[in-house]
Structures are given as structure tokens and as C-alpha cells.
Image 1 (cartoon, rainbow, N blue to C red):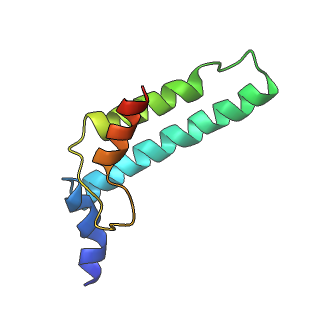
Image 2 (tube, rainbow, N blue to C red):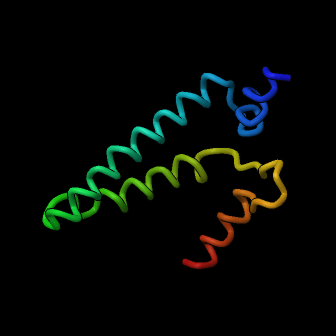
Length: 91
């Protein structure tokens, strides 16, 4: 039961627990650093002009474009596929 709590979601996206941890840490670290750059940009508008946008584009590409997208088990949340279709329709 407890093992399932740690492995169910990573398996749903085609990763092991440790692979998923590495990906999540990588995403989180990138967001923390880019967030700090965005805060500094707010104070000093001449710094980090494109950092936030580039971070979002890179993380979107890594998460959606390069990963096999699978729907969440929670049907109240839209699936990654539906989110991707909405983004493409908006472009």
C-alpha cells in the first residue's frame, strides 16, 4: 500500500521513483532559479529580460513535447493531452 503511493504516479508517466525524483528536482531547481531571476528583473528591468519566458518554454518542451503524455487518474483534472490541444488551438 505505501509502496504504491510512491510508485503509482511515476509509473503512470513511464518513470521509476528515482527517475521521477530526478526530473522533479530538475524542474523545481530550474523554477527556483528562474523565479529568483524574475524577482530581480522586477527590481532591475534591464536584467534577465527573457529568463522567465525561456524557462517556461524549456520546461513545457521537456514535460509535454518530449514525454509520453498520459492522462491523470483524477478525472476532475484535464489530461496533458487536452492541455496540449488547448495550447495548440490558442496559437
